[in-house]
Length: 193
Image (cartoon, rainbow, N blue to C red):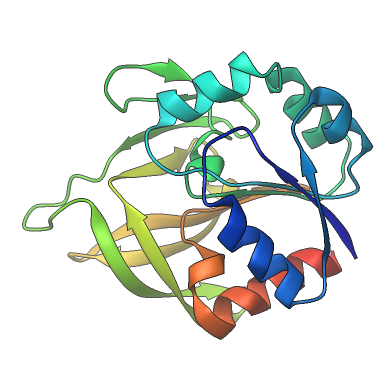
């Protein structure tokens, strides 16, 4: 199964690549709009600050290509900040525009008594099955439409967004490439759709 991994200079590209290859994917890298246009299925990783990631995408001229790909109905997976960038905007260190593929915004996790960034393992229910994934984040996505909220985890008695979906577009806040067998199973599922 061929999968294209977007390399825009930010993100844990090699660990995502290894996880994809581990489950049998043929991985190609996209570093230009033309590469994205040719893709059959797309993975967009991201780590660090939202603005930094969006700036890197803009600087490489990838924004419109990502939006076009998302509207093509081909499978699109955003990981960590790659998921947050699916939203309209983020309030991390200011207010910055995202890709606007899923209506909503990104705000700081603000739960009394809980430290951020949240780093650790959390169980979520995804596709009717309980799985455990590894998270590292201080901000979470708030989709406007509740139907776009695919999964949450519990922190301090409150729900935190773990995954979002709109049609062919899926975003996960956790790191499947660092989440052992459950993470590999999620990647297998993405490759099967």
